Image (cartoon, rainbow, N blue to C red):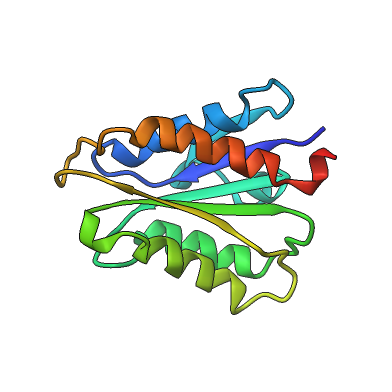
Amino acid sequence: MVRAIVIYDSWYGCTKGIADEVARGLSADGRVPTIVAKVRSTSLEHIVDHDIIVVGSPNHFGAPTAHIKQLLAELRKSDLRGKRLAFFDTCFARDRGKAVGKMEAALREKNPLISPPFLGLSVVVEGVQGPVAPGALSESREFGRSVRASTALLA
């Protein structure tokens, strides 16, 4: 059975909210058990035990948070062949895609044992503490559905 995990870091709750919505999309059809975990509350072994790994971070000065960077450094050393990886960030409109791009690059450039392509989502927040832009929650659920649908392991 295909299993998914959504790992996130969040300072004010916006990124956690998006992580929850991505998980709802992943598990919407009942075929993919999905858990959501804060990056500091789970182990690398637990994360790589899943078939679908989604990593989310707030944009912190144009990059993911230090905890997410550390996770990505650990993931680079892992054999991730056959796993579906996806990334999302929360950011101001002017920073859209910056942290997602850096998360993707951190894995793509350093590990030949990863199966791209990656999927990515950048969610706009309207202030440092939120809220997320209108429509972002449904967009996040749809992103989760897209990740699930693109996973060859489900076939």
